[in-house]
Length: 178
Image (cartoon, rainbow, N blue to C red; front, side, top):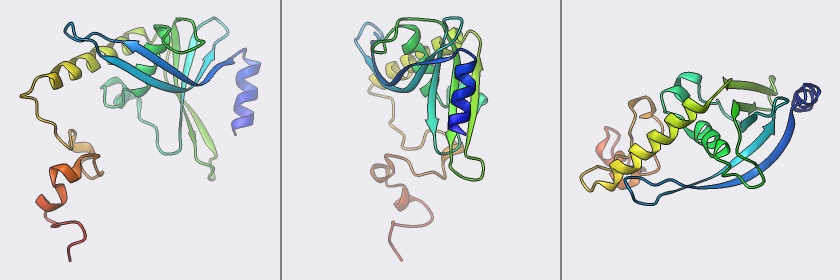
């Protein structure tokens, strides 16, 4: 699947530009410096000079709705970094594709999912603004640090569940308790 996809993309004039590319962007929030750092799995150059930001997933990639709602901002933030020229060896440019490659190795070995095609500048700018709002909110000492922010993902373990004592406060009791 991967080789066939690469052959098709290259026949269309799409060329890999950067792989595992590192980016840094100074993002002032309310006059206070904040650094946005990231690594893109891949950035391609499209035939018309636009950029495609690609992220590889082994599980199910986020949907367009999740991306648009800001629930899965990774790819759009990477797009904002690419547009700003924050990636090493990648000139600032117009980001025209935000793409997930789902690589499963199963019966269906892979899937190319273009979540945004065309001018993605508004979507990427919204992701940056969402990040600014989030950082500004957490600079306020009155903002609580919740271990589970979104009910949709409540059944998934959170990174801070142990600090929030989720197992202790849930109906199941302590982890490992019989």
